[in-house]
Figure (cartoon, helix red, strand yellow):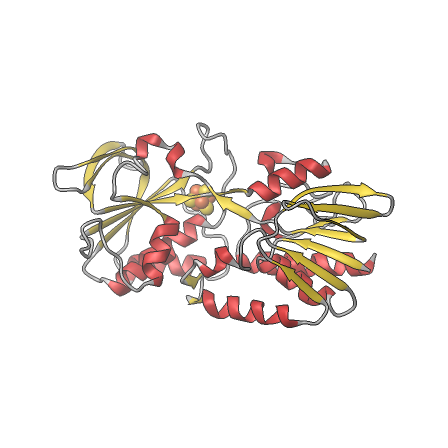
Length: 332
Ligand code: SF4
């Protein structure tokens, strides 16, 4: 059986490694290397293990003789022809496969769309992706190159948000903010860290413990409230206007960095290929047959799904889901 897997992230690679035991697998990746999202991370929740170590483990699986990796090769369309799927790449190449696994993952919400928060306007306003890069470099700095005195995180940017049109919860950003807050305190204990949240969704094993540790051991401040507006101060800091919804009072505070916890959205590849194959679902994610027993199957024969092309998903769940997809494909 010939299998095409679209997307060389954790889901695509894990499924490829399993399926390569018995089948020929071609793995298409639009970027010029695999695992780009994972490689941009420093440490993983909840155990603060190295993202690079996991990425190395996954990448080692690509050396299997039955896997052909094609990087910088976006698949732009797919069509059912007879018993096979015909894929077309951006350069116009076509190839037919017996089965296709969509593992096209996610992109993060574009913070420019929240103009009132000043991303792209004020230098002190950054996203959680940029904060992760600083943590990976072992130094968190404000826009003047100094250790920040105050860092403020804002949850739910582009998620659970009427205005941006994304009503869903992105699932991973609460715990990511707590993780990053702890990492900042470990690097710079003198920095004050605040997290503004609507409600904290610490749903996974070990997450609640991280939340407690953030407060009790590291002194991270949690404020239930929304930030309505950010502006620049004369000394290049960020002024934040917010409401403390527990106390019912408006607040104003200055910070060196405002970190926007950007949510997960369907990647361009996910949205366009799901639409092309007629399996597009809510918010442009790909739609499985059923979230319970048929979550790797689609309404199209021979077309399967794995990972965050379906909905926001953490890496642990993504890898498990990829294994389930491989079983579903292998059993057909
Ligand atoms: S995980 Fe937390 S920050 Fe992310 S969308 Fe859900 S509630 Fe908001």
